Image 1 (tube, rainbow, N blue to C red):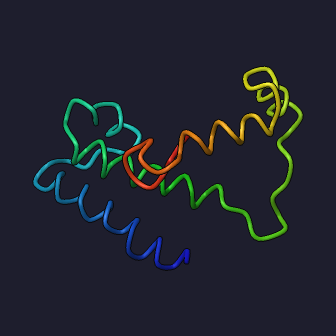
Image 2 (image 1 turned 30 degrees about the horizontal axis):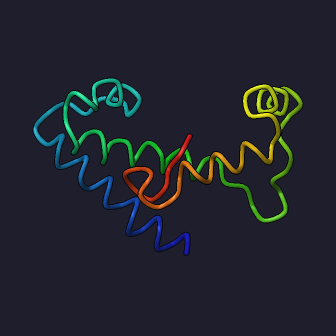
Length: 107
């Protein structure tokens, strides 16, 4: 459920990135991501997990409130992927188990 995902999974990333930053100034999350790869897995994985989850929660829509992409986004998707269905297929493949660190985050 979303509650378990938020309270357990997302929270683990928050706890781990806070431990990695302990004793240091805590930069804004976007700034932290600029050096995350060089700083190692604790920063890349946990910082990335926090960033991705924060984005996920912001982008969620209540059931029945989602919809089709805007005309501008639909045109960009069609230009890059051929169609929305092709985009979805490639997106799902990229997020398949084992394709990425974490739980299938793709963007």
